[in-house]
Amino acid sequence: MFVDKVSINVKSGKGGDGAVAFRREKYVPNGGPSGGDGGKGGNVIFKSNSALNTLEAFRYKRKFAAEAGENGSRSNMSGKDGKDIVIEVPVGTVIFDSATGALICDMVEDNQEITVLNGGRGGRGNQHFATSTRQSPKFAKPGDEAEEKNLILELKTIADVGLIGFPNVGKSTILSMVTNATPKIANYHFTTLSPNLGIVKYKNSEEFVLADIPGLIEGASSGQGLGHQFLRHVERTRLLVHVLDASGVEGRDPKKDFDIINNELSLYAEKLKERPQIVVLNKTDLIDIDNKEEIIKDLTTYFEQKGYRVFDSSAAMNDGLDKIMNYIVEVLPTIERTPLFFTTEEKVLYAPKAEKEYEIEKENGTYYVEGKMMRRLINSVNLEDYESSTYFQRVLKNKGIFAELEKMGITDGDTVNIEGFEFEYYK
Image (cartoon, rainbow, N blue to C red; front, top):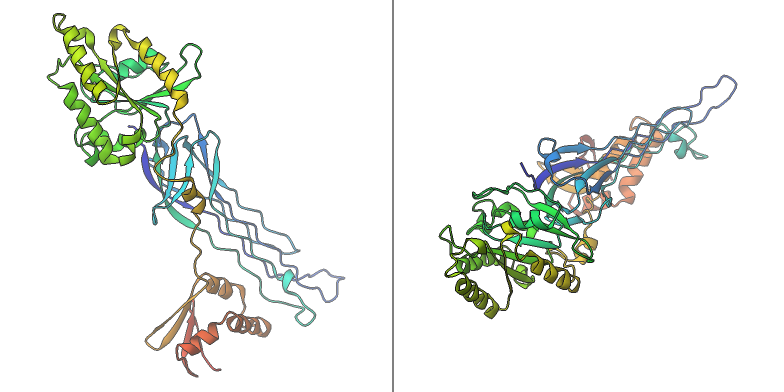
């Protein structure tokens, strides 16, 4: 099964906690604090790999987590940093934030790397909090919490030229004739169940990638057939080669087929209307010999009047393909590589939204103070120690929490709950 869109969960590593420890050597009087720092948590990194061509690896494994940093230890020993997790994806994978839909990165080059989540910083040990008046600090800083995010990975095939058209019109045959690809070919619909890519090296031209985009039928843009899951692969192509069955042996009308497919492309994305497109009248060997010249002339005139360059061919007989290739290698260098349906600026603008330091809510007479900063504060203090308790109150004052509580109408004796720790407020 070809997998080209998945949802996954990623989580960075938590930072290790700083340690509370004191020197205890036999001949060292008044041994001071010696708690080491916690290690940094691992990052979540995505890396593109040209050897991969589907997101099949994510079909069953949907959760990925980096390693947490180790806690600090005694004798000023720092904890070990957590290992990064490197997630490999195919070239052409686009990464979106599931919650906001924001674009995070478009992996367009081989070995491209991006750090999606940073590991938590390690907490500082109590060795850092000794002062002339506080010589035995009994508290340390905890490591930063891990970050977690749900992502959508979407694979959009990277190809310079895309073969489009109804099933069984000869796209796979053309691909096999002009590239090194070996697609499955048979005389029934939906032979191709995934985009096939091949490298074209024609005469003295530069190499380019040719893709057979399968599954396009009427209603593809709204989910009919296989088209809905493969239309996204048309986005990256610089030139579209619209392959039609000129013989009509299956009772199809090539003129009507052309309009249907182009309508589906427009319904999927208006910008595809602007994509350069040529028309290939294929299977000419199956046209009745008595009417062949007249049918080809009529179809050629029809599409040329619409402004398209038209070629006739019999891919199965390897007839007419040279003319098509000559034109492609001539015109392709003049067509700029177009980005996907988002801009470079959108990539730059992406940044994880920072969590608010704290929020205060009043419920049933109790004032609840919650947030990332509050969790770190509660974990870093020893409220049974006088110096640590004083530090705790000083932080609440300096951060404006007491002032905000007073604005909300708190009075002496009211209860304050900070991340589960409750105390009575007195000014």
